[in-house]
Length: 279
Length: 279
Image (tube, rainbow over all chains, first blue to last red; front, side, top):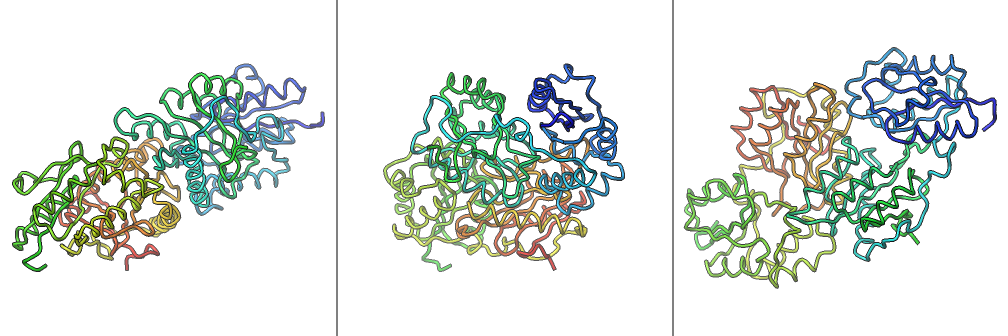
């Protein structure tokens, strides 16, 4: 990053926006954050409150105006926005124009459309991992627990299923146990998928693996699959076996804390390639 | 059906086993019903109680022995068994052998394996619709309410998504609203899918369409996608817009009652072809 650049962070919930803001503060890179009303707020927002504005999610025009006014040059989208709120959008004119350009209100299409729009407005759109490359999911066995042969087979089943599903921009997470696809994520989000699948294992049964991978054609600049300590905590609480994430194309936030949780609870964590291999 | 034939009904929950038993009683065809412990029981079971035995789900050998003892010649599988209970199975030896033949514990593979096993044991396996053809989902607009152009587009999106997903034997139902796939059914079942998606529409929003289609390679003899008045009731209660089901390859049970519910609540019901067309 050059000193003449200023980062605009379009921030949803979770720790990623905070991580990027801290990164900027540490490196002395100027930044400005936009958060949204009625949406999850990034953690640590208070610490850079003077650098932020709260807008309605549909106020696409105002996001641009705000960033221009603050002389932002580069834009990063980070954190979770709640997708169902799509149905609650109050769009301004630029927002309406944008949304009418997409037939299916899919994440990918919407985000890519927003991306193109921001670039036309003169901003450089950056991936969170371009600003802070250390957050990319590495390949390998990351914790102390190793998956069994049967679990590796479940990972392969999950990845194959995700590949089919991903072409449709439905979801990027799936839970498999003993060869059975317990659940597929769509709009509900990963946490609700985990909670739902916990009840589908029969009696007092435990186990099952969360598998997460980028969708085909997913715009990795603006929307990478993300896991962090909250995912691990929920998996541990509900006695799942482990987590496999497609490496290189996913973000792993709070790795140290996450792996502590995993090791303590006997969960495996691996960054895998497209064939489900971690080594 | 010839008079020398006797129907064995492997019965789960819902009204289908009862419908078949009644069909047999009316036509004077002898029948015998097997139900399972800890599983949903068919409605009206009491009325033919003397013709039934309750077994554990894993007692595959006992199902065969029971049917042979009762001189059953033709076997029909009907009604819902709870899939998660797969993890609670207490298998006898024939059951263990069967389950070990399938790599993925997918419905399709399990059911086809059971089918082959029953055929090897000398039974003729019949589809419920072969015994009672009037229960097949017809093509056409079945109720009074017509889907809009936008809703037809959502139906097409749902069918396309199901086609991709179906190759993996994950699920046969999906809910789409305004171009967004709200949810995909896996192990949880259609009712839970409906309930979950109702909460994902944002604020007080209503609407959304349930789309249901047979999976690729689904063994239609033993496992047809099924809808009935319970599905319609839940959709109506939760203010969905309608239901589209792939015609010819699905069962529509309790059509009269279902369409009454649909018409009263402004829900459309259509049997569609693979392109989502009902006319």
